[in-house]
Length: 279
Ligand code: SAM
Image (cartoon, rainbow, N blue to C red; front, side, top):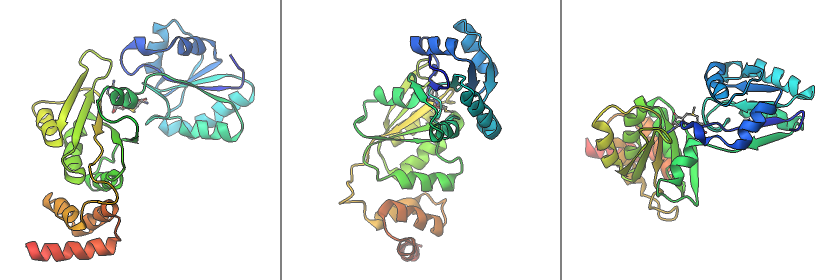
């Protein structure tokens, strides 16, 4: 155990056996544990017989708490950061604290372990040599479509987190914006009802529409077939986005310009032409 060190410790995403020996040892040795939700983490710590001073560190108190944690580190204390599940900083609090610690030259040591994105990708059967972890898509449809358009021409597998109640909307936007690619929904990883739903975007939408999706999900999307050199013609992109019937011409132009790499004004002009030819 090194003093004045910040440990970034991964905890299980479901199955408690998915914690490492090293994580348990370090959690039992540090001076302070900073947790996203102290009540939630107490259950985990009790399970492993760990009793250490706990402090909260979450999105809305990270300014104040970050400074206190840095002070503890400056005084030579060792601190472990954990989140509710998986690897801290990965769609979880921690980034600002790590950034500030690094900037001050405080040693930051990762203690690797579970991460839903990597677990889902590893068993998905989709290419793993190149992938983009894009986190949670925006919750509002317009922003979500623009976000998807922005990642649509990346070369590898796309890995997204999503809340179960937004899964269907996001899957249908994936079909609209990214086209009919292979999609996988990895649900409840490492838990009793773990499930991988494979298929084309439409097949997965059909499967998910059969009932209420419960639990946590990771969405994976296969790389698009078109390479940058032979990208989808602007007209096709515009027609596909127009077919959804829910976007304004301005939003269609915005998204098409990201997908096709043309200026917004060019996309807007083309969209207007198509609209008046098709109306
Ligand atoms: N830091 C975590 C990690 O390393 O995976 C992610 C935290 S993020 C707030 C929570 C999201 O991760 C969930 O909404 C879901 O998309 C994904 N997730 C977490 N646990 C999962 C599980 N057991 N099965 C599937 N997805 C999971």
